[in-house]
Image 1 (cartoon, rainbow, N blue to C red):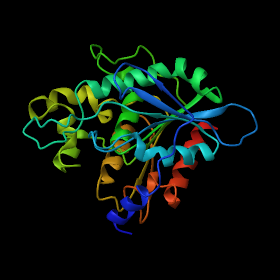
Image 2: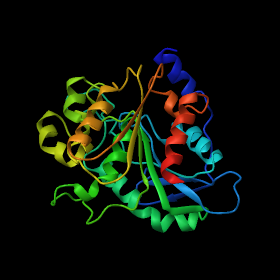
Image 3: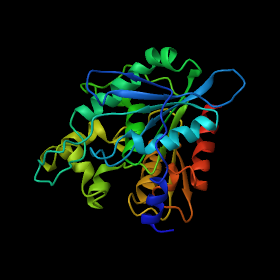
Image 4: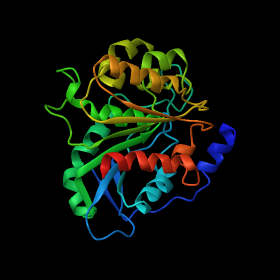
Length: 285
């Protein structure tokens, strides 16, 4: 199947309304949608925190991954689908709108959302077991999931640094945009990583604050899942991240799926989506 056909399939599912929504800030994009696990035996379920992709650009919000969130809920997970501020629709950095991401707001929001979950989840998703939390994200969201799990190894002066790791069972990053220098060389998503960090003049200086490949090792169980025929985010970025982790003394799983492109990983109709759920379950259960 071509990338266009895979994208059409992934985006063909109707949005699924959440069971609850809560704010973690005052901006309209600072919200989390909660999906309760379907069925189950009454015991609390692992919590999967979903960070959506879309190259950190404004037109792509959390709605396109609501079928994926619902798919995970039907697999017995409690799900938190996080929204965050994305690129401004106003052209700048010499780029046609929409620009990828906002600095520092995109990072502010992801950090604030993850930090707010211990307070929000008991109120809005009491079926969730916070002790079994897994972060996942697709594409740009895969980057954000890896970054959120690495905040304890940020430079000492970074505003998002934590004194200790966020309590997690692990991270499952789906076709993550990671390894920003290489991603920029490959012009991934039309230069999105450079735009996210504020343009060419800021890019190199901000990589140590924003690129998970510069924040290894983390000590948190991590698996990358990617399709070998992905033409949106080359799978070599995942391989290079796993190699960098190994050189830093950490084992990162890297599952490469044959004849799979970028979008089946979040498409409930695709076999690859079931593989993703299995990878999450291996960490969560």
